Length: 162
Image (cartoon, rainbow, N blue to C red; front, side):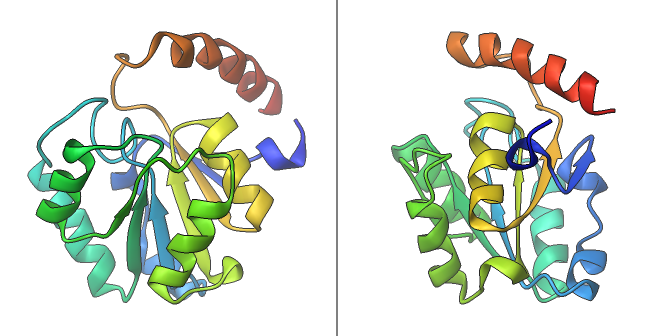
């Protein structure tokens, strides 16, 4: 697998990520993808488990920022409920929004992790910028039709990387 498509870590969900361990390894900020990473695709509400995870991450001293390719009121509403700033219309794997997130959090690439559910947007964008990348399994099978097609290629690549 090409190095830009290789996540630093793979896990089932964000709830399996040890935020205290990230902080102990020098991570100071975490960029969070939204759909199918921290909430199911298209969700309008934040689960209490997520609220608790955000609180724990902050307690570990981590700055947080949501960076989503989506836009609109739904992202802003979730951002407000969670108390986490959000950058929308990111066009990942482009790096512009990721750089803006670093500036917002006051972190650098070497002290920032990105958590996402897609190889060709989240992991590729994060790796291109030199971030630690954490790939989680999608929370829902529901997503855009094109994304479902890309998932087939992702599964093949991930199988080959094991």
